[in-house]
Length: 380
Ligand code: CMC
Image 1 (cartoon, rainbow, N blue to C red):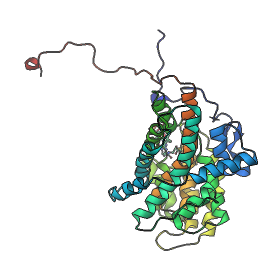
Image 2 (image 1 turned 45 degrees about the vertical axis):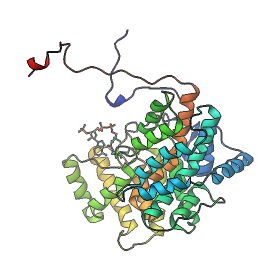
Image 3 (image 1 turned 30 degrees about the vertical axis):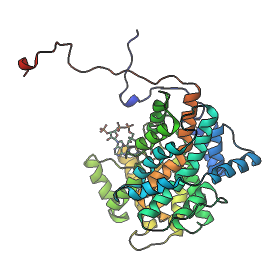
Image 4 (image 1 turned 180 degrees about the vertical axis):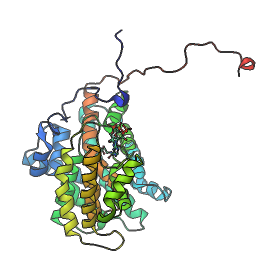
């Protein structure tokens, strides 16, 4: 047996093969660069691409939309479960519970065939935004807003959340953020999903685990922490001093740095202009401050991070600001990430199960040398 190499955090390790996405030469999904997709496609088209392998023709997109829109509803017991959750339950934790529970109600739950997995993936794509919006409104004591079948994924979500249709500019900005969040190769949550289903578990279990992995602030949870950073920095006047002091304390500035991208994340550049436009469209408001002030603060932090740490923003940096400018509450930001990444997760689950081999790496043992057990009375 050859001596295995060890890389902490599996950095640089090739842990599998995929046809879904690559970060080599700029991020692309099934051969299309994310910039091209963000400019020329809707999230719904990108969801089809990730799940079905090719961009849809018009008739395929229409059928896909019809199937997904028809599945925008939850089993009634799930709403009772939401009502029973402790009031401190975060929207992401409620979503994790919802996806796990939805497995009980899905007739295909235990069927790991390619076609059954696609059916389940499309249903979860439809159900996740409904679960986020219903749970959110319930927690606020507001009546639920039934899903609309005529709206896109992004537009329907904003409609269900607010009870009024979003502007075309808001829908476009949300759509672009969803396209950029949709897929990212062997990131922690996707890898977690692949590990789970590699035991021949099922899609709902894999996605439930993926949501748990997404939650952490080093991964998807970072988009919620971005606003904490900006609020702590306090505004353009104090931002430079605050950032230097935070770096001196060795604090992590959430929304910066990346395991793979060391010279910048192309997705952050694409979304930045949407965050700025949303801030311009939403002037100062009570309680949440002035979105333009946070854009200026962000620019200063970016400059200091580049000069002091040679570190650049990742996608969560503009996404957190965009959602804040759109007046969405901070605890919804990571659930929104999940509402998009369900496509990438499901595509990977399907790819794994279509050609499965158990994922079971080794550990480098650093514990005590071999020793004999002493009888209880002789220990200590
Ligand atoms: N701010 C300040 N210092 C940082 C940051 C940061 N955001 N990120 C890394 N460092 C420092 C870190 O403290 C360490 O310093 P030292 O060598 O002195 O101990 C060094 O850089 C290497 O850090 P690492 O954690 O070993 O690097 P990594 O490649 O494992 O980290 C990362 C990747 C994303 C976990 C990290 O950059 C980070 O914690 N960023 C902030 C959280 C964040 O924005 N996460 C979102 C990631 S991208 C999209 C997504 O998945 O949601």
